[in-house]
Amino acid sequence: MSETAIPDRRSDPVPEHDTTVIWADPQRHAAFMRWLGEVAPGHGLDPASVRLASADASFRRYLRIDGAGETRIIMDAPPDKENCEPFVHVADLMAAAGLRVPQVLAWDRNHGFLLLSDLGRQTMLQAIDRDHAQANLGLYLGAVDALVDWQRSSRPGVLPDYDEALLQRELGLFPQWYLQQHRGVMPDTRMLDTLASTFAQIVRENLSWPGVYVHRDFMPRNLMMPPPGDGTAGAHPVLGVLDFQDAVFGPITYDIASLMRDAFLSWDEEFVLDVTIRYWEKARAANLPVGADFGAFYRGVEWMGLQRHLKVAGIFARLTLRDGKPQYLADTPRFIQYIRATAARYRELKPLLRLVDQVEGIEERSGFAYGRM
Image (cartoon, rainbow, N blue to C red; front, side):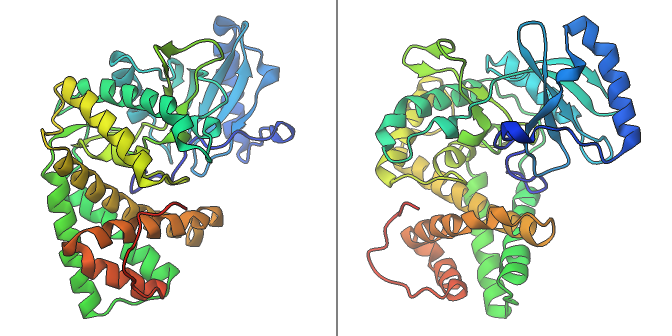
């Protein structure tokens, strides 16, 4: 999840009884109907079948429409609030890399309407067996396949750089929104010094890793299951990829960290290690810059995950307090658990652990486990 974006731009499907499309702006509705009238004949669309496809926490929403024997997706993205250019650009990059992504069939740049191919209704998250980690290995290896293909296609200068300024700006969301606004903690000088020192170490560690294309939200909620009986490569499903418009060129540790340290579910470290090792081996075989020492790579993944979790804790607090979306804070304990687990593992991060424990009212204890929520 990016600094400016909310998580899950395309989230859980809307219940069948709640698919009515409501237009708050009559002028935008009129513009949509004009555009739909223009594109419908060429794509065999039934304008009367338009319904809401997914709930959305941003200004972007998705509609579903029936076509000639198949459904299509319409992205409704007001151009004064959402920029569709990155979506179209990254979709082209991913398609060229061999990934299964929505195909842009028509695009009204002036009004922010896009007609897309439909990747289906079931996300990887919905298909996961939460009680039996190993039962999901094939799904995760399908995700690894897509990730390696995406990274192999990387070229510098094509996507924005995930640089020091952006990393620091994202980390700043934690004290601003989680500590001050959510927890009501006004950091004193000592706490600010701890945060500044820790953030500098995190940024330095993360930027020490070579750059590749980074999705920034590569997790099961943004991966789509293939149609029944289709989309397999050997034993692994060929997963569709969504929510990629915030892609950047940055540390190779990022996307595997977000895949295995998910915003909405957690796994025991044994499973996390298993999939991460398999990714590392596949990435090495593809000549990706993951290094020859898995221990060093795993440290990099943990530190990259720490940066992400500090950022997302701030984003989730902001979604609640500024945007009136309190459902996201329900997952905050998961991020605090991730943060504490990583901070407890590394001596350099112990000051951060003490800070978080102080804020959360937790007494530090020995034998701290990675933990599953």
